[in-house]
Length: 282
Image (cartoon, rainbow, N blue to C red; front, side, top):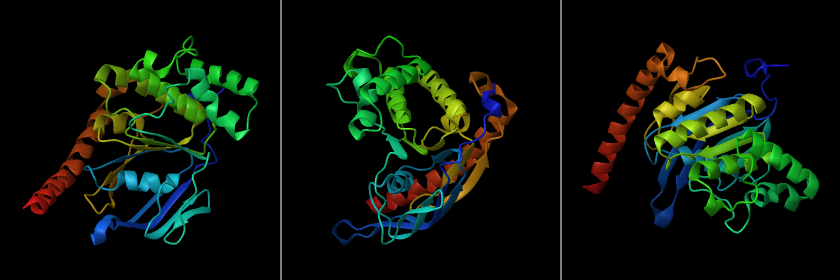
């Protein structure tokens, strides 16, 4: 039986972002959020984006998900054109988003939330969906809460339910937009470990946005540090920490070195963003 470190990466989920520019034009203001940004994300990579607030991280995620278009450039998934300056991507089950503020249906139980997508789309029978959902919930440490409603479980449990629901669709890419931002440190450590366990089992491509540098290094295969708006990739850190990982890596020399490099790169961009904000307010 293969261990997590021996599991071959998914052959699906290669993302190619080529010279992407995104200009928002509210009331003729023409705000450039992303400028000539390029990234190559391998299939099975846990890619983490960090950078100043408003620098364009979520803009890229939304373009991949199909929530809005781009002004110039192209984004490809597994060699297929997702979107370009003249074509917006269509949302699809191959790209599932876990949102910052949560998106569980409060009137559905946990089991009904997790089975909703596959049964409504007709890709699984009700029986098969329930069997698969219970398996996924078990892998997330959520046995016994299938009949509970979202309001009856903790925030950490709700996040795990959302990840289980996303994985039910067997996506090529899992898109996570600061999913743990509002959590306390103790809850984060638990949810981080469950997400790493899911990744080690599935080796799905993960496109993860965060402001938390420790989170970025602990979870990621690569950390993409972005410039202040308009966004480009400033530098890429290869996280050379073996998998599977647990909290003990937080005291390793590699982790401490990477954290220092990340802080230095992000701090420089944060100062630029702060200075730009002051000019805009003046």
